[in-house]
Amino acid sequence: MKKYISIVSIFALTLGLFGCKDYMDINYDPNSPAEENLTSDMILPAVEMNIAATYSYTLHVLGAYNAQYYAQQFGTPNYVAYSQFNVSATNGSGTYTQLFQRALGNLEIVKKKATESGQNGVLLQATVLRAYAFQLLVDAFGEVPYAEAFDVTNLAPKYDKGEDIYNGLLKELDDALAQVKAGDQVATSYIFPSKSLNDWIGFANAQKLKLLSRMSGVKDVSADIQAVIDGGNLPTADIQIAGCWANASGQANPFFSEEKATWGRATHNIIANLALVGTMKQDTYTDPRLAAWFEPNGSNEFQGSISGTNLSTVEDKYKTTAAWCETKFAYNTPVILIAQTEVEFFLAEFYARKGDAGNAATHYAAAIDASFETAGVAGSAACIAQFPYDQSKWKEVIGISKWVALAGINGFEGYTEARRLDYPAFGAVKGSDMYAGTGALDLTLYVPGTLYTPFQRFDQVGDNHLLERFPYPESSTARNSNSPEFPGYLEPIFWGK
Image (cartoon, rainbow, N blue to C red; front, side, top):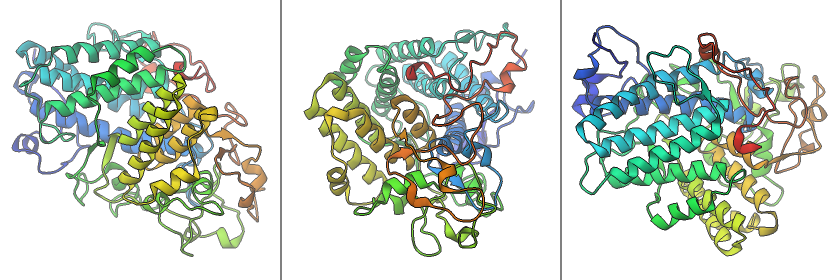
């Protein structure tokens, strides 16, 4: 019996990388080519587009509201629940299905073909993307099927612990890296159009660094991180999908398509959050990256709103969309999978944990430099001077500066790192202190560098807490008799315990 695969625009992809074509037009179609007739050059770009769509839109929006980068535009309804730290089992189902069926499922075919044909470069590509997708799932849900996930004879695969999945992914990456050799060919890719094996080796090492760094607070992995550093094959630029987006439906940056484009939502729901704006714009310093990430409001000022409400009964001067700052996304904004600023912050954290203040400070400064470079603005030296490295409170300094930097990269990464490092921490001021539910706002109460309990917050999360995990997705639990009982919204992912 022939097996069929869901794939994106096979005809366009086989012609070459001329644009990110119809990246979400992926369906299980009986008229699609059979698995044996597909090549890795057809499948891998489709996988990349599926990961990009999930990561840069769905997970980005979920994370950005929970990290308090975003608040809800006046009078609009779409994401109010997210701004109240409320994510349901239904909300997470799309993320789970997209990554499992349309990314990981297709990567199983690439791995099989690469293994059978001895294409070790292609096997490395599939392994890196598999590790990337599985890490997203663990960081969102905590536990997911892994060891038994793609056994077609098993209709109820067990959920593996997050730490076991991380360890498994590290071994997979090590095994794939050990097999590649100079001259191995790689498949067509949107991430690295030049088809460079060395670029994929760098991606693999950056992914290892990310996995190990997330584990570093609960397990001594310092020797493993040192080995990655000593290997000298970490990337020196953002790992991203760029240069292929077009200003047309199905071909633009996924977030732009959904939230900013004329063919997207009729109402723009997303505005800047007071927490981010209030940290980046203080009495004596305004961070230049703020203008790179958000449009000024109708008064040419940067003003953030509060979480947990769409301000439907606010006083008149705020009762207009022009009062608030919308996101600044273009059709060709790159989708950054691992940013250079992340690599440098992970290295700064590694040296900080060792007590090596000099190297920690060097990489901390390099992380901020890289963030400014990605944002396309000058002024990193002034930012470093305003928020200098301090070994005595390294976690706070790195945590807050990283939270700011990730606001311009991906909301889910910022949310994940805030949960892991516990910075920014919650301050004493709550959303209900700044807004009584009607009438005036007193946004001057906000303390820079802190989070705050939303005006209205999800009861199962409560005051002064982030949502620590998303509930197991309904699309999985409804079909899997081995799905575990949800441990609760305040149960940290293993790396946050």
